[in-house]
Length: 168
Image (tube, rainbow, N blue to C red; front, top):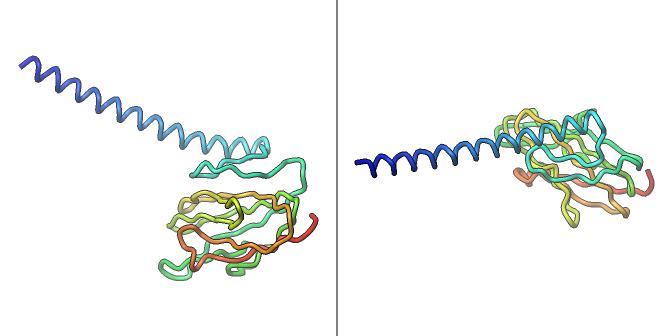
């Protein structure tokens, strides 16, 4: 009887330990992402962690920058589009400058996760942007070109082009 009670106690302790370790790791990861966003806002750090994926951006605080505001628009159930925050243009052609830190700030007022992917080599990503949240990505193209962008979760309806033009 003592042996079964001891085994039961060991199993219970193991489950509790695993639950605590997972909970602490999960909470630490979530808090570190919030701390990174707060530090960026307060101190203007040049490298920002994405909200959920931890992907790093490549903006440099010493070079000129260009900021574009995008939002997610739900047109009907499960049909989403990118929209400019200023005029509501759907899946707009974005104009960015070469050798400039181009920052795309994204608002997601929907109840679905989205992720902006810029089809460069290597790809640039905003990381997953949770429902009713925001995120951003920054990239610095080195040559003029036309490239595409899309949502990782809705690539058929949330897509467009980016024109990289010379100079800031």
